[in-house]
Each structure stands twice: as C-alpha cells, then as structure tokens.
Length: 161
Image (cartoon, rainbow, N blue to C red; front, side, top):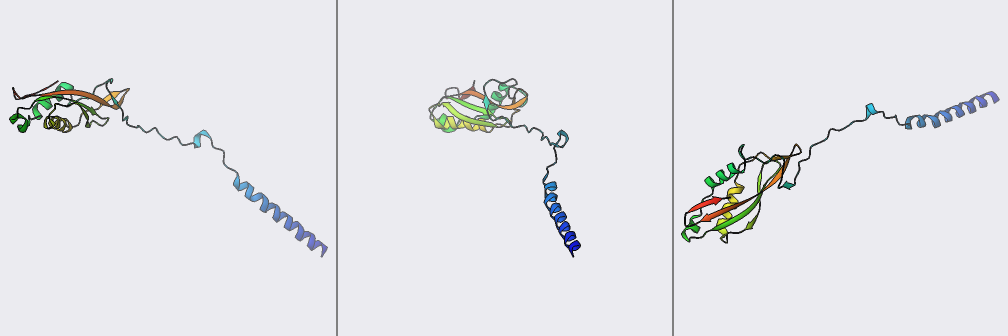
C-alpha cells in the first residue's frame, strides 16, 4: 500500500509540475527579426495648400495663363441687363487651381460695383474645364491666380488682365 501511495503521490507531483510548466511555454513570444516586420509603403497625400509661386505652373489646355484668358474672352458674355443700363466696371477675382486641376473661385477682391458683372466673371471662371495642376518638388499642388476683368459699356467689350 505504501508503494501505491508513493507512486500516486509521485504521479501527482509530476502532473502538477507539467501543468505549471506547460502554460509558461505557450506564453513565450516569438522573437521578431527584420525579416518578419512588415513595412507598409508610403501613401502619397495630396497637398491641399495653394501657392503663388511654384516650380511648374498649372496649365490650362496645355498652355499658360494666356490660354485661359483667351478661353475667358470667348466665354464671358456682357450681361444684357448691364449693357442696357450702361453699367460697367472692373472685377478683381482670386481663384485657385487645386492639386487635382479643379478651379475654385475664392473671392471677389474688388467688386465692379455691379453685382451682375461680378457674378458673370465668377461663373465663367468656375465653369472652366480641368487644368493640369501645378508641381512643386515633384508633387501636385494648388496654385493661386488673380485676374482683373473689365466690363466696358462704351465699347461693349470685356477685357481680361
């Protein structure tokens, strides 16, 4: 009987030792080496700032600001209401071409004093087709522009500077 008790108690000690040691083996974390670390590629984030000076200016239909002025000259119509009342004036508009090439009118810096003329100038600029965005340090960025649009009732013409 003593032998059985000794064997049972020895067996209990062995089982107890295994139970205690087994979880500690599973808890150990594997050592990470440089080969197992995943490196995510850098994602390009568009620059949402607007710059007055850039390395490569934004392009309208492959040309420069002069081609945009030619486009506006064709597309700005002197409002008939303003012509009838002989209203005229110069509108100074600040606009930007964002990093995707889309045009945004930011503000009328100087009003012509005639709301319909200001609105016509803003609408013509907003209706512009997409541009090729400006580049700075090899990445697309927004670029600021300033145009003066003069409505002359005497000559019935629109001049853009």
